[in-house]
Image 1 (spheres, rainbow, N blue to C red):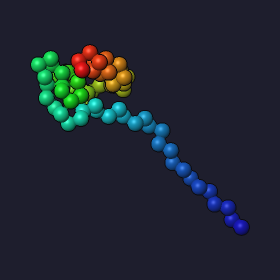
Image 2 (cartoon, helix red, strand yellow; image 1 turned 30 degrees about the horizontal axis):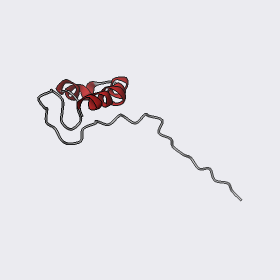
Image 3 (cartoon, rainbow, N blue to C red; image 1 turned 90 degrees about the horizontal axis):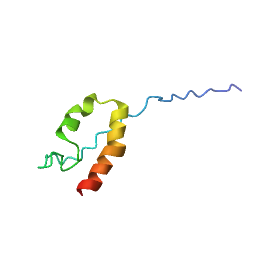
Length: 70
């Protein structure tokens, strides 16, 4: 009987952090988007941000901003 070998391909690349955009795109008087709470600058720079900066924004900045504003 011949044994078969199963080859499994594992994707070792990290999944990019998705944008916090929720589709409500309007900058309020406070300068923050009413949907995702990012500033206009943060929205414009999102595509060029590195992983660490995106993670900091998602994990630290936006939750603090939400607690302060809402």
